[in-house]
View 1 (cartoon, rainbow, N blue to C red):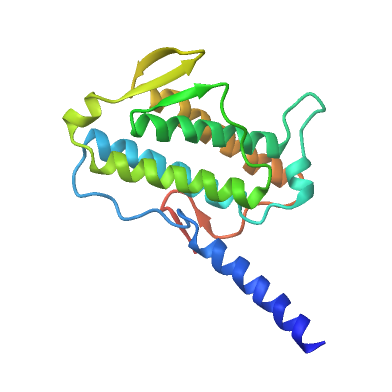
View 2 (cartoon, rainbow, N blue to C red):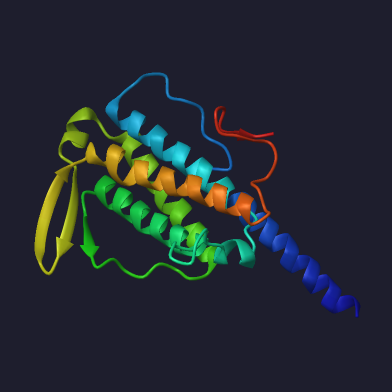
Length: 193
Protein backbone atom coordinates (compact mmCIF):
# COMPACT_ATOMS: atom_id res chain seq x y z
CA UNK A 1 0.00 0.00 0.00
CA UNK A 2 2.81 2.39 0.83
CA UNK A 3 4.53 2.03 -2.59
CA UNK A 4 1.48 2.96 -4.74
CA UNK A 5 0.85 5.94 -2.46
CA UNK A 6 4.46 7.02 -3.00
CA UNK A 7 4.04 6.84 -6.81
CA UNK A 8 0.80 8.81 -6.63
CA UNK A 9 2.56 11.55 -4.66
CA UNK A 10 5.50 11.48 -7.07
CA UNK A 11 3.11 11.81 -10.03
CA UNK A 12 1.30 14.77 -8.44
CA UNK A 13 4.62 16.42 -7.56
CA UNK A 14 5.85 15.91 -11.15
CA UNK A 15 2.70 17.52 -12.55
CA UNK A 16 3.04 20.48 -10.21
CA UNK A 17 6.71 20.89 -11.10
CA UNK A 18 5.93 20.69 -14.82
CA UNK A 19 3.18 23.30 -14.43
CA UNK A 20 5.59 25.62 -12.61
CA UNK A 21 8.17 25.28 -15.38
CA UNK A 22 5.84 26.42 -18.15
CA UNK A 23 6.70 29.83 -19.58
CA UNK A 24 4.80 32.99 -18.74
CA UNK A 25 3.70 32.36 -15.18
CA UNK A 26 4.85 36.00 -14.97
CA UNK A 27 5.99 38.56 -17.51
CA UNK A 28 9.73 39.32 -17.58
CA UNK A 29 10.99 42.78 -16.65
CA UNK A 30 10.45 45.38 -19.36
CA UNK A 31 13.34 46.34 -21.65
CA UNK A 32 15.06 49.68 -21.03
CA UNK A 33 14.23 51.06 -24.47
CA UNK A 34 11.41 50.91 -27.00
CA UNK A 35 12.07 49.20 -30.31
CA UNK A 36 9.88 47.47 -32.85
CA UNK A 37 11.29 44.10 -31.81
CA UNK A 38 10.85 44.44 -28.09
CA UNK A 39 7.40 45.99 -28.55
CA UNK A 40 6.24 42.94 -30.52
CA UNK A 41 7.99 40.69 -28.01
CA UNK A 42 6.15 42.39 -25.13
CA UNK A 43 2.80 41.86 -26.84
CA UNK A 44 3.63 38.16 -27.23
CA UNK A 45 4.71 37.97 -23.59
CA UNK A 46 1.40 39.55 -22.54
CA UNK A 47 -0.45 36.98 -24.64
CA UNK A 48 1.64 34.19 -23.12
CA UNK A 49 0.89 35.37 -19.57
CA UNK A 50 -2.85 35.60 -20.23
CA UNK A 51 -2.87 32.21 -21.97
CA UNK A 52 -0.84 30.57 -19.20
CA UNK A 53 -3.38 31.54 -16.54
CA UNK A 54 -6.46 31.15 -18.75
CA UNK A 55 -5.51 27.49 -19.27
CA UNK A 56 -4.18 26.68 -15.79
CA UNK A 57 -6.40 24.18 -14.00
CA UNK A 58 -8.91 23.58 -16.79
CA UNK A 59 -11.15 20.56 -16.21
CA UNK A 60 -12.74 18.19 -18.71
CA UNK A 61 -16.10 19.98 -18.36
CA UNK A 62 -14.36 23.32 -19.06
CA UNK A 63 -12.83 21.92 -22.26
CA UNK A 64 -16.20 20.66 -23.45
CA UNK A 65 -18.04 23.90 -22.67
CA UNK A 66 -19.52 25.86 -25.56
CA UNK A 67 -21.94 28.80 -25.20
CA UNK A 68 -24.25 27.36 -27.87
CA UNK A 69 -24.30 24.07 -29.73
CA UNK A 70 -23.11 25.88 -32.89
CA UNK A 71 -20.17 27.56 -31.13
CA UNK A 72 -16.68 26.17 -30.82
CA UNK A 73 -15.83 24.41 -27.55
CA UNK A 74 -13.12 25.66 -25.21
CA UNK A 75 -10.84 22.88 -26.49
CA UNK A 76 -11.55 23.91 -30.09
CA UNK A 77 -10.75 27.51 -29.15
CA UNK A 78 -7.44 26.43 -27.57
CA UNK A 79 -6.56 24.48 -30.72
CA UNK A 80 -7.28 27.59 -32.80
CA UNK A 81 -5.01 29.66 -30.53
CA UNK A 82 -2.32 27.01 -31.08
CA UNK A 83 -2.57 27.50 -34.86
CA UNK A 84 -2.30 31.28 -34.40
CA UNK A 85 0.83 30.87 -32.27
CA UNK A 86 2.36 28.68 -34.99
CA UNK A 87 1.82 31.56 -37.43
CA UNK A 88 3.40 34.01 -34.96
CA UNK A 89 6.43 31.75 -34.49
CA UNK A 90 6.80 31.06 -38.21
CA UNK A 91 6.76 34.80 -38.91
CA UNK A 92 9.43 35.33 -36.24
CA UNK A 93 11.53 32.68 -38.03
CA UNK A 94 10.57 34.04 -41.49
CA UNK A 95 9.21 30.60 -42.38
CA UNK A 96 6.01 29.66 -44.17
CA UNK A 97 2.86 28.62 -42.33
CA UNK A 98 1.53 25.74 -44.41
CA UNK A 99 -2.17 25.45 -45.13
CA UNK A 100 -3.93 23.35 -44.20
CA UNK A 101 -2.16 23.62 -40.86
CA UNK A 102 -0.92 20.52 -39.04
CA UNK A 103 -3.33 19.10 -36.49
CA UNK A 104 -2.91 20.50 -32.99
CA UNK A 105 -2.39 18.27 -29.96
CA UNK A 106 -5.65 16.92 -28.51
CA UNK A 107 -4.29 16.53 -24.97
CA UNK A 108 -4.60 19.72 -22.90
CA UNK A 109 -1.15 19.56 -21.31
CA UNK A 110 0.59 18.87 -24.63
CA UNK A 111 -1.41 21.71 -26.20
CA UNK A 112 -0.49 24.12 -23.37
CA UNK A 113 3.19 23.20 -23.47
CA UNK A 114 3.44 23.52 -27.27
CA UNK A 115 1.55 26.83 -27.36
CA UNK A 116 3.52 28.42 -24.52
CA UNK A 117 6.89 27.20 -25.82
CA UNK A 118 6.09 28.58 -29.31
CA UNK A 119 5.16 31.94 -27.79
CA UNK A 120 8.32 31.94 -25.68
CA UNK A 121 10.50 31.23 -28.73
CA UNK A 122 8.76 33.91 -30.82
CA UNK A 123 9.05 36.51 -28.03
CA UNK A 124 12.77 35.75 -27.64
CA UNK A 125 13.40 36.02 -31.38
CA UNK A 126 11.63 39.38 -31.67
CA UNK A 127 13.38 40.70 -28.57
CA UNK A 128 16.76 40.08 -30.17
CA UNK A 129 16.03 41.36 -33.70
CA UNK A 130 17.38 44.67 -34.94
CA UNK A 131 15.15 47.11 -36.83
CA UNK A 132 16.73 45.98 -40.12
CA UNK A 133 16.15 42.30 -39.32
CA UNK A 134 12.47 42.92 -38.52
CA UNK A 135 12.01 44.77 -41.80
CA UNK A 136 13.10 41.58 -43.59
CA UNK A 137 10.45 39.43 -41.87
CA UNK A 138 7.15 38.45 -43.42
CA UNK A 139 4.09 36.47 -42.53
CA UNK A 140 4.21 33.76 -45.19
CA UNK A 141 1.32 31.43 -45.97
CA UNK A 142 1.87 28.45 -48.25
CA UNK A 143 -0.99 26.53 -49.83
CA UNK A 144 -0.51 23.96 -52.59
CA UNK A 145 2.98 25.27 -53.34
CA UNK A 146 1.87 28.91 -53.68
CA UNK A 147 3.17 31.46 -51.19
CA UNK A 148 1.64 34.74 -50.12
CA UNK A 149 3.56 37.27 -48.04
CA UNK A 150 2.40 39.98 -45.66
CA UNK A 151 4.32 42.53 -43.59
CA UNK A 152 5.26 41.41 -40.09
CA UNK A 153 3.19 44.33 -38.74
CA UNK A 154 0.10 42.32 -39.65
CA UNK A 155 0.99 40.06 -36.71
CA UNK A 156 -0.25 42.77 -34.35
CA UNK A 157 -3.73 43.24 -35.82
CA UNK A 158 -3.88 39.65 -37.06
CA UNK A 159 -2.70 36.56 -35.14
CA UNK A 160 -1.62 38.33 -31.92
CA UNK A 161 -4.89 40.27 -31.55
CA UNK A 162 -6.90 37.21 -32.56
CA UNK A 163 -5.11 34.99 -30.02
CA UNK A 164 -5.68 37.61 -27.28
CA UNK A 165 -9.36 37.74 -28.20
CA UNK A 166 -9.72 33.96 -28.05
CA UNK A 167 -7.78 33.76 -24.79
CA UNK A 168 -10.37 36.15 -23.36
CA UNK A 169 -13.07 33.78 -24.60
CA UNK A 170 -11.43 30.92 -22.70
CA UNK A 171 -11.46 33.05 -19.53
CA UNK A 172 -15.16 33.79 -20.07
CA UNK A 173 -16.03 30.19 -20.94
CA UNK A 174 -14.33 28.76 -17.87
CA UNK A 175 -16.03 31.32 -15.62
CA UNK A 176 -19.37 30.30 -17.10
CA UNK A 177 -18.58 26.60 -16.59
CA UNK A 178 -17.88 27.31 -12.90
CA UNK A 179 -14.08 27.39 -12.88
CA UNK A 180 -12.78 31.00 -12.98
CA UNK A 181 -9.06 31.69 -13.43
CA UNK A 182 -6.97 31.40 -10.27
CA UNK A 183 -7.23 34.29 -7.83
CA UNK A 184 -4.38 36.77 -7.79
CA UNK A 185 -3.65 36.88 -11.54
CA UNK A 186 -2.85 40.52 -12.30
CA UNK A 187 -2.73 41.05 -16.08
CA UNK A 188 -1.76 44.73 -15.65
CA UNK A 189 1.41 43.93 -13.69
CA UNK A 190 1.98 40.53 -15.32
CA UNK A 191 2.25 38.65 -12.03
CA UNK A 192 0.24 36.26 -9.91
CA UNK A 193 0.08 37.27 -6.27
